[in-house]
Length: 148
Image (cartoon, rainbow, N blue to C red; front, side, top):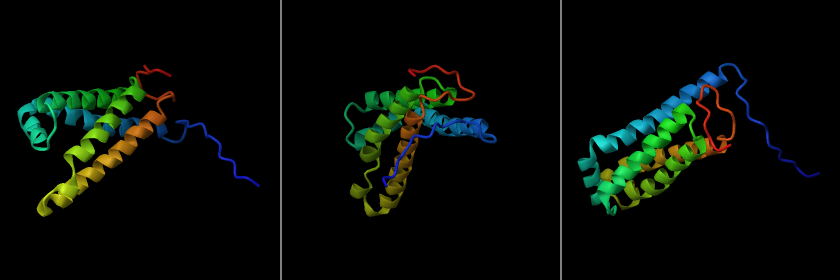
């Protein structure tokens, strides 16, 4: 007998599921959007750190990453183009995580902090991929613009 794996249609019909999903979107997307906003508010310092890490065109890279974070975060909070918002965040995290938090190359006294930041970003990447995975669903309390 072969084990059959079937897709289960996800729905937001459990007790407070829609409200909890909204809170999760606000916490996840809002935090990343705020982080992106800080890229612009502290552009010089952030670009200096990026330059120290060997990022090419650090000011432009920081501005582009700030845009990805703000767009992705706000998109998730509002439910606007969630697949694109999740993808923007995933691409940012795929690039920024090993570049900016290379704990394996950090001095001993910074290694634990960089590893913590690296692992935090890996978790955020997982959440971004989950957003992409559920982007075709109708999201409760969302503007509802999307590709699907």
